Each structure stands twice: as structure tokens, then as C-alpha cells.
Image (cartoon, rainbow, N blue to C red; front, side, top):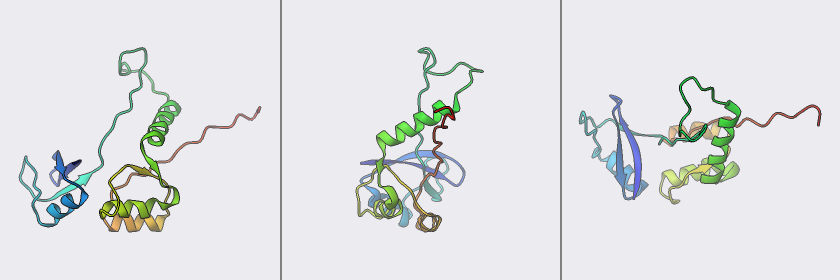
Length: 142
């Protein structure tokens, strides 16, 4: 079973459970998916959300007005992605298409792609998220 976050054109977000990617694609193509709130059939998959906890003193969340260190947040995001996503390197677009069309098992992947490959992924309806990874600044005294 696989769970997808779905959203209708009216902005209602809900979860759908499917046997696999192929089952989702088949139901969408046949018009069997609809929003449970407004019943529209204009439904699409949206990126799933995840949270990264930044604990400042055991409270579980920063207090209002507490400044978040962007470098630390970036490091936490990078660490999470490195630990939980398969690195497919420059084969990102190829692997994403395989997953999209059911030729490979669904999994979270990371890697690099060219602008042309990204255009193809968008045309094929493959959802992906691109974010820059900041590299640590070099100390000029080293």
C-alpha cells in the first residue's frame, strides 16, 4: 500500500491509499478519483510534507520570536535527505520516470538533473522538488 497526498482544484487536501503507483494512475485516468469535500474529479498528487524538529531546550518547538539558524536548518534538511532518500546521482530523471511509470518500486530518491531532463519530468507529470544545498563556507584562515 502507498499513501499519496492529493489536492483538488478548489484547494482541498486529502490522503488517498492505493495498492501501488499503477493503481493510482489507472484510477486517475478512469476518472475514479474525487475530492471527498466538494466531489470534484479535478484531483492531483501534491508533494507530501514532512517536518524537521529543531529542539531548543526540550520544548519540541522554538518559542515565538526565537530566531532559527538558517545554516543549522539547512544542515538538518540535508542530513534528513541524505539519510532517507536513495542517491541516484545523475540518473535522477531516468529513475524518477521508472518510478512514475511503475517500472521501479516507489521510493524517495535524490540526485541531479539537467534543465532539459526537468522539462521532460514536468511534461510527463512527475512531481519533484528542487532545492539548493548550501555548502559550508570556507574559513580564509585555514
